[in-house]
Length: 421
Image (tube, rainbow, N blue to C red; front, side, top):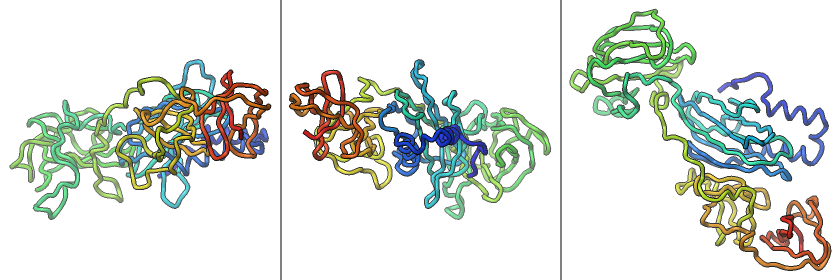
């Protein structure tokens, strides 16, 4: 695939601004750029459609990324919503994932209108990166769904539920396979243009019977309508989406079957491709997660377990688990999809865990104590981590979790950070 844009994306333009201001040489700026690159390498796996809530951490620049499978002919619809009061810029970028190569940019959202659609040219894997501007904080809701790229179904009054024979089905006792889909309808039902274009051929063949070929000049595809009872267009005619091309029948080698339209799509240099993704209306986007909003809060596992790289009961692929974690490790909730929480470990790894597999760290602290001396609260459980604050001697604290020798402390005013006790 080729990039759909030549000018810098909003994300690239912002990165240049950081460079011009010298912020890319400061820790926060370097961390922001590193998070953007890390997201292209370590994406979570999702099955479309998804609705996921998310959370941006101001003290630790991160970027969320989602990898999903696409079919040629699908249109992917990406939408992100923010609270109306949030003056935050967010960058949405879609990429094609090609093994052994850097991700190929496909489409980006304007930072003011976080909603866009793009066409999948081929079967494969795509990746969506979501990243706010530097030091931004807030919550968001992300929706990613499949849509048909052809705006009109090729048989009037029908939907993809009328497809009775699919791509690849055996034909002639297995000698050949079906290079299209069969859409069943009553004889005389209008077969209509699924998109605007020009009629390039009409005629009658032993296999296809009465046929019409429609060129979709905008995308380089040729749409094939076969087994028509009548043809109602002529070569060279320009048609609009929805115009009638002919009437459904069972001519050609379909004369012993019920009336139906054989609908095919051909691409120059590639031949026939599966037309079903071009016309299929998948399931609608899921509703928002129900229950309390835990984004920005810490939780712990009820029992030692592995985080997952994908949400849902059925995991995708063969590399589905992250390192095993003990039940003392605090996990920051940064999103939710259905009944799965997207969490971040103290080391920065991101994965999914079922909401019923965790307990709230604040509601069930490991223990409570009084600090014997002034204690710095580190932003991360490492020696080199910067301090985010200091608690005075005799301050009562709760221990929310443990990572190696570090304890995650919460003070009486909600101050949270890491320390060695």
